[in-house]
Amino acid sequence: MTRILAVAAFLAVFFMPEARAQAPVCGAYAVIKNMVERQEESLLYRGISESGSHLLEVFLDSREGSARGFTVVITRAVPSAETQTCVVFSGFGWENVQGDTPWRTPKGEPS
Image 1 (cartoon, rainbow, N blue to C red):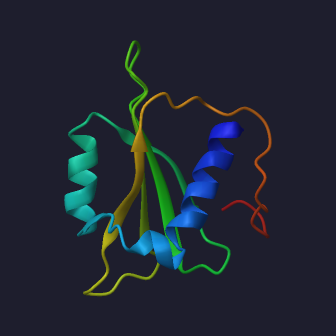
Image 2 (image 1 turned 90 degrees about the horizontal axis):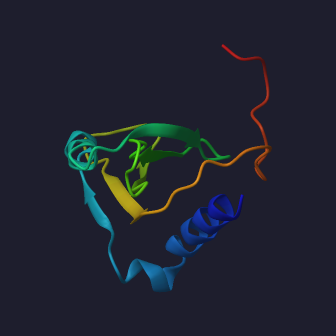
């Protein structure tokens, strides 16, 4: 749970004006996804912002004995020709979280 809160805090800081001065790595979704998958990380979690404007994805290297590398990327939920995907966080030591998350759950039934 601590890791999820840390990622959430990082993302909140990412959208502050001072943090924008240090530009994240951005590019076409296919390029960023290929870059992440070359590190042998695969998509583990996907979520959408409350407003529905952004899609967040977490990729993880879950191989036995790996350093548990992970990458967090964000993309506009409704893509256009100019839409880019940005790597907002990457690191090692990801631990799977058990239990409830601190975020609101979507309304409606599972599809």
